Amino acid sequence: MSNKTMLGDASGRGAVDGFRVTCPAMQHPYTEAEIDAVVKVMREACGQTQGKYMVEFEQAFCAFTGAKHAFAVNNCTSALKMAAIFCHIQPGDEVIIPAYTFCASAIPFGDLGAKIVWADISPDTWTIDPDDIARKITPKTKAVVCVHLLGMPCDMKRIVPIARAHGLKVVEDCAQALDCRIDGQHVGTFGDFGCFSFHSAKTMTTLGEGGMFVCADDADAAAAPGIRHNGCCAYPADRARYWSPAMSCVDSFLDDRWPQNFCIGEAQCALGTEELKSVIANNNTLIEQDRKIREKLAGLPEISFSRCPENSRYVVHQYIMHYDGSACGKTRDDLLDLMTKKYGIRCIVQYYPLYRYPLFQRKGCGEFDCPVLDKWWDGSFSFPWWCGMDDAVIDTLCSSLISAVEELRG
Ligand SMILES: Cc1ncc(COP(=O)(O)O)c(C=O)c1O
Image (tube, rainbow, N blue to C red):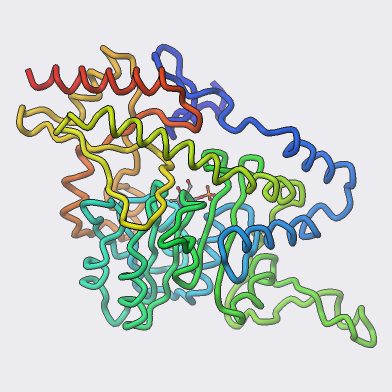
């Protein structure tokens, strides 16, 4: 089995033999226009990085999200690392991060020596709980990371004022939330920094990897190209000797921060500009699939769903539900045993609470106080999920789940 297939399996998106419902092998079939955009850059073959296609992509991204400044990078983990660098994280600083998320939301902060303080989730949205943020702020807290997990918006209208009252930076992890909005405002533009992913499992992908860092502050924006590319940025064009002391500047605006190389190639950027055009339509398809599933499962009291806050656009990045079998003494694992073995539906369990991972425990981040997540997670599971499921697939998934839940009632 190739490594690529294994990664697909781990995220629940790859096709797996022997099950009645499998994700299509090609999750992101490219349109001819998208293929042409990449081939055009290949034919031009000039300046394959940091050129006009990157600038075009960044401008298109600002127009799409309303962000003031955008910087294309090689993935969202890099964008999060840029955010951590701009937060000036020093060893011992505390950063509040939801424990229910993908590990990349936390690793860039831990890597700079932050003490990670795990926040609990809200029981209805399953995103970071604003009250728990407020409870966990100490004089050492420097930043809070809000993850719009599964494309569900965090309660930014409550979180930003709490953070501002304590002088904290607000980082928004929007890896799964392109086109997710609150009152029409795009997530990633409420706090100080927004970080987006174009990994192949996301709504749009720039050939498998890619990301975007957005920020509001002009001084941060002036430093971002240097942080992104080893401190390199252009000297003013009007120098008498353009070559002196060197062709590019290697420390302007960096202060005490080490720069990185997070650049992304021109072909990926050209594709990104093209892909942005179909994001809204693809999300509308996912939202409609979600509506149908909720309708079909509405009669099962054991199964619950997240609740989207009013006036918000939830873009349904994965399909996670919760099973409560306590009335009949059954667990999520009993349900998944039936779903996989009897009904041939490969449900999966995603986003282990991060404090349970040996990685975070070894790094001194194993302490936690997240009673809602700890209880809720043990009942969570997800359906296979992709954009463009037909009604027959939705019927198979839902009728199997209804039968399995009824069977467990005994
Ligand atoms: C919530 C979240 N944050 C960050 C990342 C990291 O994104 P990337 O793979 O682009 O580095 C992911 C990727 O799946 C994610 O789901």
